[in-house]
Length: 377
Image 1: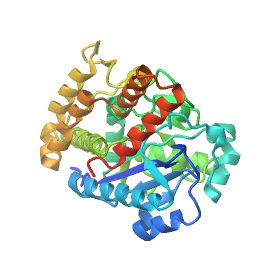
Image 2 (image 1 turned 120 degrees about the vertical axis):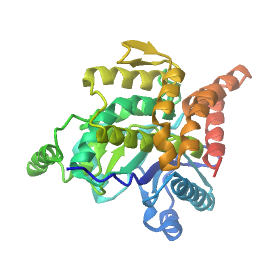
Image 3 (image 1 turned 60 degrees about the horizontal axis):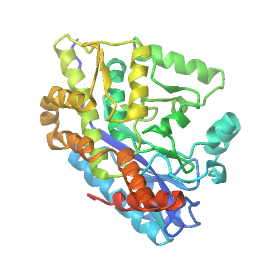
């Protein structure tokens, strides 16, 4: 029986840090800030685990143009509200100099439970990410496409990298956020499931044993959403610039449609062992777009720009149908300009060369991030 083509709707979620406009360090949201945000954005804004974090989410968007307009508006409104409290939001996956043990977690039941259950591991979560939801209404199709999509997650991670610093030190990784996040349970590459029923039974086993309340406590890089009929890509760092976030969303949406079109031709993307996929995940985490990934079909390491060109060519027909061809092609600009991580490193080393000490060079990064937040909005 033929499955109806999914709508491939989009929903984007981003987590931001609130930094003091003078000290440039993260600070807890002052009393009243969240109330003011909700007046402006209603249920599209919420607190996060740490009081210095804030999360926004678009509405269900029919296409990339709608997603861009909504996310841009959310960034702008968060910025306006924060400015009234002497704060600036930044979209970055790790703050270059903040200390995790100086942060305060949000006193909500969900976060209190997390702190109790996960102890010291969750206290280090001074990290932010971007989640891309793609609407796929059929349960079993959602699982089938999710299994195949895992191949492309390192490609998306590489483009998104924005966390090369941790507590004032250059870590040598383009996405240190993922190193921190992987300390949580139920993270990393998702398992392969034969059906939605198999997935649901695995989750229910944990629920029945009171290990988790629901599927939202499963934090794989890619998962069926616990709340919506979507597949949720969670592997990406949050992008400092709106243009980059939209390019990544367009690529995510286009890959899913490409996989669906293969299915209509009785074809599918080959699934590789998590051992091999994990190697590419590590290379993306370590090097971003500068180190290359393994092309498993060719059996060799290929420079990332070459892989990106092949991927754009592969999914461009689907991007045209979805109306996101321009946004997909703009992924090339991320490689040319540098990812969020690359640009932070460039600013840092330039400041050091010009005579700045470590602290001042790190502050230059935060100033860049503040500027980037509304770029292209």
